[in-house]
Length: 103
Image (cartoon, rainbow, N blue to C red):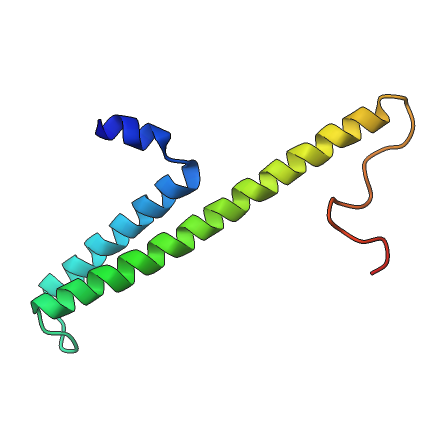
């Protein structure tokens, strides 16, 4: 069941969960090791887990999602370029998709 759920997740979600989990492990290890600024209490542990795991998970998911979107756009642009250059005219596209002519 867990394997089915894991296989259904997208790549960016898996990356976000991995880095969020890694951040949680590092935060808990840092609190257990001891720090003069944060005593080991249930409140500090919960806050460290939420802040570190949430931040790292969200940021890594966003970066991975942007990378996937860029790769998809590049593949679509290359496919469109191959379709138009099949007649033997022109070379690589000079303007990317979504860019305006004036600018």
